[in-house]
Image (tube, rainbow, N blue to C red; front, side, top):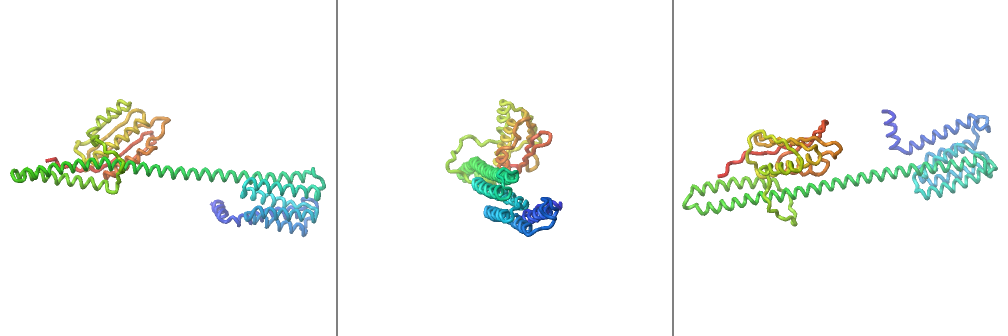
Length: 392
């Protein structure tokens, strides 16, 4: 936990991390000079050593600020020290490698290669003809390779970060596109629901119109028949008002064509099951409770939910499904269960589930979809189904 907290803190404070890195480089450089590893000192820091350590400290600590300018300044300081003293400072070459890496990381490839090549050529020339006196010395060639390696490493890290950023951006765009497509599908489904509910409401309005005409016709001669017609008009008006509340806010496109096919409902369930059986899906049907007439909105929603759920069962299942319709007090419950076939896409991975949820919500109910660990896919829907008054 402490290491994770430290990493998070340093990621939020890059300057502090660079200063820490600079201190580490300078500490190891000073330790090397004090230990007399090069055999040129007696374990005492000279003025040139202190100057080299200071240049390395500043170069590494400020490596993120104007990396090309920082690299050029560090290279000039290193060259001046080598020319002035005739002695190489290993800590400066370590700092040059770090600054070169940072420059390649934060600069485009062409600029990084041009700057690093110029730097390497300059340092190689100075080292070969001033410090070592030989253009083929291992130190001179090693310096050239050191700058090239630091540049290659920085460019590789920059390319990888750019690739990861591009992949993440593509994922975000794909997610946005998927959300937009889902929203568009929801709007389309609502339009279809509005069209079908429009037909339902139109039917009831037509009934009201006929009953009103009949009541007006028999009002004087048969008042009792007029009373029954008016009662029927009252019930039809209540039904229409209830269904109109389900489509408030749902818009209908102007270019939709009015269909002449009757609005489907549970009365056509047998035909649907026969068609699915002909296509290869065997549905085991069970009914709990006594069947009763449903409100037109609920009847339509039940039919569409069963149609989509059984279609998914046929598409992704093993060829069998179980359908249970439960008539309870003031509600109807649907359960569709099927096994998911091996090697097929998980059921519900498309937009059909969105449509079923919209259907259930429009009718005032809810829908739940689950994929169990045993490979069973279940669609469970509950919709309000108040008992309708018998038509007079």
